[in-house]
Length: 158
Image 1 (tube, rainbow, N blue to C red):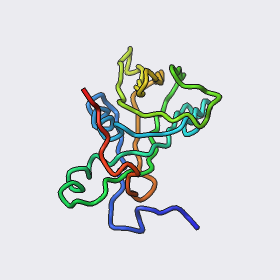
Image 2: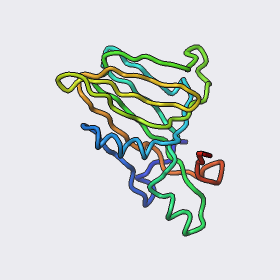
Image 3: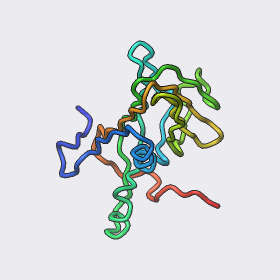
Image 4: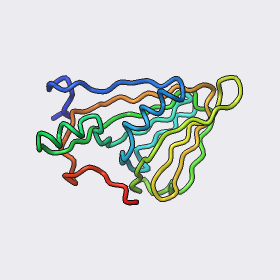
């Protein structure tokens, strides 16, 4: 048995790239409230790549699901930061691969000559700071959407 794939259905998977801060804001809005475990984070130092396998809430389908009164959806997606020189973490227990994390935002702090830092902010004061030689982040859906277990969109109480 294999995983469901977008090609098996009528939906089109997202496959987007961010090469400037404005593009990254779009990706950030699409991965807001994605959940993953610490074990879903892969630092490939030799390839200068950080990859995260996310359970992404499909914000782009949120209103359509609401109007059609059908279940809200999530999809498995890869968020990949290329040209990663180093990675620092805060609030992530590296020895607890089952630790559940919730991604709140992705931002870029520019440095000199196109380099900088990609910051992934997590719920509960967690964060990943990735020093990059240039901004190159991709988001790619890798499974078909599935009904969100919560049956409702994520909320952020004031």
